[in-house]
Length: 616
Image 1 (cartoon, rainbow, N blue to C red):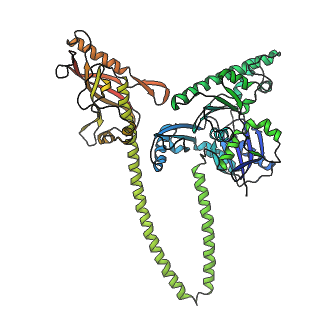
Image 2: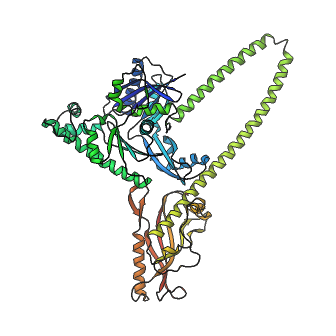
Image 3: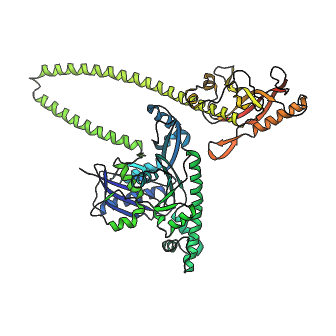
């Protein structure tokens, strides 16, 4: 028996509805509609939610549909999507690590958002790829409650870009080389890149409305007239009508801005994922209906460009106008992908339905059971009352049995409390382990950066964390991060102090442990911490044995350390200084046994500030 699925994709300008029949792994489109919302940009969130909810109800009533629940997908800048790489861990620990990662990535307190995640790609690799989606609770709850006020239940709240990926893979995949989907909406363009089992996406805040605004400004006309002209222009082509030619040039300027963002996004994807160059571009969304846009983008990007076949593998029901599907097919990618996800056939299946609503539903189901049980109990007691005199002994026996059951349940309740106490303890331990994991990975990467970027004529034999709050009053604790540096960091000398070691392998990274003093003695919160750096410097200048020459070389070392830059974790496109306030504590010349081939050495101790981006 086929299952009926009613899906709505809610955009900034239009509402798309589709009814599917899912049966034996196939999906059939039985009905669809595209409704213009007509909501001004300055409308309040409450009024917008109310308009959307009423439009959903009117659309269902018009088609005489009364579904038990509906599935919706959302898009726009309020939806937060991130792709995160995590170290390979057991399946049971992924959720704990992802929650920690969500707290770092989502720009709001985790208690104020609805979030979900899914593992994508190869789970057996050294790193696991995760897609993390989030939305502020007040935004998604406001919309869902507005729909429920129309007596319509919502079963799924998905993200449009992930629904598009489901439709893209189902109808156009698999993708052996990189393929990009450009979904040009009213206010936002979704860029989705698929390659094999890998996925990456970004929302670009440029859409069809920007083109309409550019045409209106160029021709000094109304937004309504600009929308009409947008349907007539041929972007990138010269027309006999001067007005249309000027409108086409205005549209081309906006599309060139969009192309610049697409190129930058593709470059970022390739740098992060070591992906191949994009070989093909698929187009969808209302903005993709502009005439000649496929040729325009193909010439600019130098790749094949074609519309997304959103229903290529989806059956079209006998009552559906096939011509209408062909005419508006490029608008249906989101809702088709949502239907695939609802039918259990989508690659991605995240859900941002508020947890409070999920809990409410579970409680309602339990209430029905409790009321039924209570009714049965009342009926049974009434029957017993009629025969009370003849069944007194039986009731006493039953009461005794129930008392025994009550005692057993009391014991079970005590056991539950004990388990809850153990659970609280374990959760606290897990949090500490997560903090240690973050610190462990940070310090290993920190050492690798120093190896890479420090001067070749210097090496470190000891790095210590200074100035940390001691675990007991009146004491001062120092935590040693590294005892010596690898041989390839010693420049041209070709020797190293005893006890040095090579770069840590991936296996060492996964099994290393942060020293207990580091984990327990660090000040709580993020901020700067002071390091003590001890090591040796090969003196290369003429007359380096003099104190002034040695001081100059030490000063040069300080400047080179202060110039080391690393990517800013808050914005990968920017960099920041690794060290700050590098200060000389002591320096002295060293002769034998470390003097090599007549080249003198100096032993130094420096202090420097380092910004630690985690709590531990």
